[in-house]
Image (cartoon, rainbow, N blue to C red; front, side, top):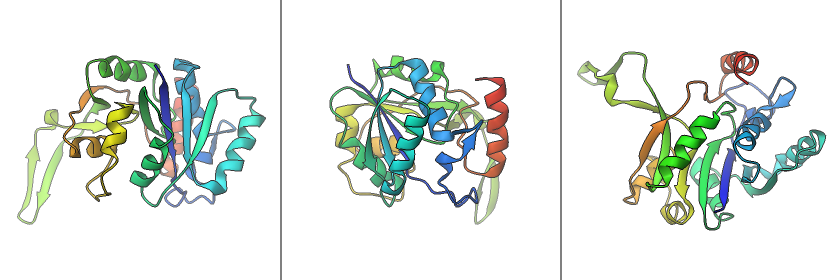
Length: 222
């Protein structure tokens, strides 16, 4: 069975305060996006990657690919205006099999998290990894706020895994601002999502302080 992984790398470096898109910022002398890809290669060398990237940075990606002597299989798809558009473009490259959709700036997804997703997908339509909330949470409205039971809520991560035919069909809909991730698109078309345990280190790097944490993780867990 074909195993695709879409690496969503269409973001910019605005919140990071960087001229380069954040996926190309280096930690330990290597761009974040390649640390991310290596996590999937550690799981399986047969993964076929679809790198969803703005065309202005495709040559830069290829330069790093050659510099580090990589041999993994990949092809590019173009990023779009919204994340939704970026993923939709990438799904056109996917044939039959299973597909994981993962943020380029989550370079610490564990082998166990990937395994959990794929094992659950054998009996489910779509799977997302989640972790528990550790802080107290409150719902705020015009009348004030109210404490909520955090055990009913989870933090959602990527990769989000789907059967290729089902997620491709789901993405035939028009964009909505209510689509916050791939699972929300999938559910919009009547599909069900299962959840599995993710890993706490699987952070999304978006701000300079996240880089500090990433350097620590790189030294301690990789």
